[in-house]
Amino acid sequence: MSDPQDALSVEDREAAEWHVRLGEPPLSAETLAAFRIWRQAGENAEAYRRVEAIWRSAGGLARDGDIEALTRATLADTGGRVRRRRRTWAAPAGLALACTLTAAVALAFWLPARGVHQTTVGGREVVALADGTQVELDTDTRIKVRYVAGERRVVLERGQALFTVARDAARPFRVEAGGTEVTALGTVFDVRRQASGARVTLVEGSVSVADSYAPARTWRLTPGQRVETFQADPAPISVDPAVATSWSEGRLVFQDTPLREAVAETNRYLTGKIVLAAGPAADTPVNGAFVTGDRDAFVAAVSDLFDLSAQPTADGGVRLSPRSLGG
Image (cartoon, rainbow, N blue to C red; front, side, top):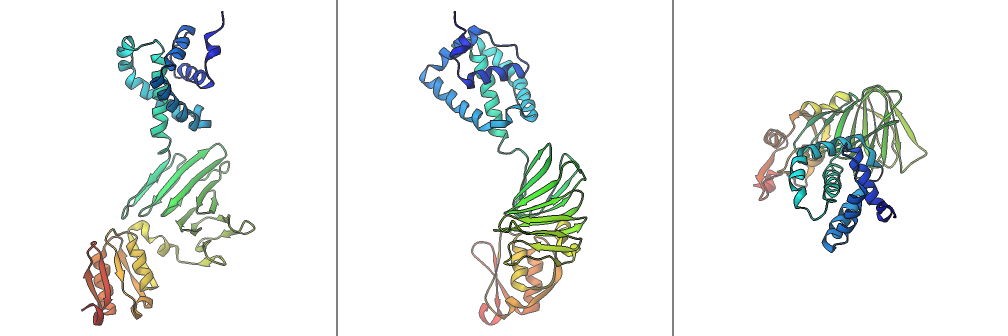
């Protein structure tokens, strides 16, 4: 007599393997055969087809320890309900299907959010990574953390972050941001994602910065240097690291910053934006320190300094314009 497992698909065999690896007793040949029969029903086949799609999308993560731990925990939480329902199922294969569905559902919900950290507009958060690295997330920032045997990688999908990297010579720490890649061991640096490339500021230690749009160029920064890879001809420049990272203390420090740039920077922390009307004040330099998210203090200061009129807008913002135009 042929082995019922011979009629099973590769995916079915993987389901059986998962069942064993999750600490459950091996599935019998009769159960596997019943499982195959159960799958022949139209609605059952469609349900399992969706499970298989999730299974395949997991790819190389099938043996990820974190996934197994999550699935075991889910099975432990639902095991009682599975056992109570087993007698009402149409086939003994229900238990195998439950395990597969549980693993698939766990993957479907867990994989997209794995290693993701983010803040909302005006928010700030400090994230402690598994290796001891600390990441401070600025307003409206999102990162994905991917640690493997020979590399620690963080993808900065949007926003800005300050990295205090734990030293690990065997696993370089890399930050990817818009085609820019920053490599460090133990150091402190700030990265701000731009539409194309990034702005990288070194506070302590040493980093190398590479740009996929200029593969032949690599910049090695020393403390107090910054490079903006989105510029036409990027080159390291000297900056004040305390000013560059003042956002991590909840402050915005402006030093001879054109008003239009100061407004844009302040708006990053606001849902009700400041609109600056065209005029000579837009290019006038601003000096001062402001609390992030304190729109009223900023508006009051620049209105008085530049003789601007502040008027509320319909969307909850504020419009700044010369008093001769704004009333």
